[in-house]
Image (cartoon, rainbow, N blue to C red; front, side):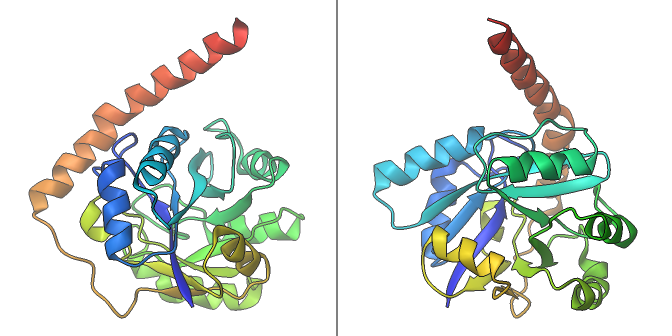
Length: 242
C-alpha cells in the first residue's frame, strides 16, 4: 500500500510551505503521490510541478484545488482549471466533473471553516450529484470533533475514504494520508473510483507548533492571500477579454 497526501497548501496560497520545501518533506515522509490544493487557483500546482521536474523526483503530483463554494469548501482533484469561487456547490461539482476531475468533501461537518454539513451532502447525493470521496481523517482543528460523526455518516454514503493533512506548515505534511494499492496517481485515481482507499494518520499526533506560528498563518490567510486571489481573478478576466 502506498501513501498519498491529497490536501496541501503552499505559500502561493494561504499556506507557509514553499514548493521546494513541500517536495523535500514529501520525499522524507515517503509519500508516493501528493495533491496541491490551494484555494481557488492552480499557481502552487504549477510551481511544485517545476520543482519535481528539476529534482527528478519520483513523487507524482495531482493538480488540485480547494474550491470556495457557497456551502463550504470542496476539493477538486485531477483538474486543469480552478472553478470560479463563491458559486453554488452544485455548479462547482459540475465544473470539476466537466474536466474529468474527482470531487472530495474537505473537512466535512467542520465548524471553524466553511464546510459541507450532513444535510447538504445528503441533498447532493439524493439529487444525483457525484461525490467521489470524503475526508475521514483531517488532523487540522477544522473538523477534529466531527470525525466519529463523519465516519458514521459515510457508512451510509459509501464514499471513498480520504485521509489528508490539510497542511499549511511543512511540519504537518503527511500527518494525514490516503492508503491505496499501487504507486502512481493513476493508481490512486482508480482506488478512489473503486472505493478501495483507506484513511490513515490517526496513529500519529501532528507536530505542535508555537502558537505564534498559527497566529501569523491566520493573518496571512485573512489579509494577504485574499487580495492576491482577487488580483489573480482580475488578471484572468482581463486576459479573457483580450
